[in-house]
Image (cartoon, rainbow, N blue to C red; front, top):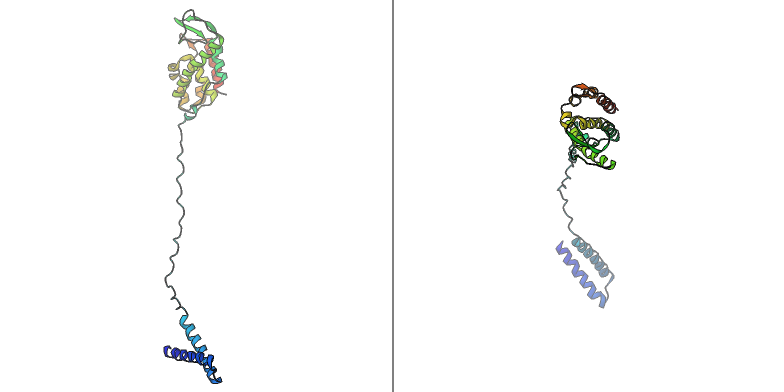
Length: 227
């Protein structure tokens, strides 16, 4: 192909030089035109880029995406049976049982060698002490907190607010220690709610004898417990 190209280039150059100055005969022009065509064809093929070899490499397939890892479910913060009792407070019905049973005394009085005032408040009571009704209410709510805390710690099953309030009234009367030894608590923690309600009536004695006032109070507490 190289020799053929050189031949036609010479013919092309000859035709240009001679044709421009003197003109060429018809046969020479025809030969020159063929030289042009042959040169263009050869030069065109020579200038064509060499076709790239087909890339035999196969593009790696994208790795098949597996299922996204599942996140672990949040751990449940389960509480014990009594977990719901933490926010319970005595309600108005429970407070009223205490008020009706204890009675309101705005001047300190001595009962069994112990000074009391207000609704049976003893911690700060002393001889000659006098308070207002509002102070008596505040002292009662302060004293009830100890009974509330005692009931929360002792009860190991879930209770509603009425049940809680009835037991706080009982604990306020018996003392936290006395409530801890009561048949109400033992039956309740065994899961016997009806038995616990009936057990309120067991704590109606004073000096070993049935006391009418305490019986009436226990009946009120039992009725509240059952609501």
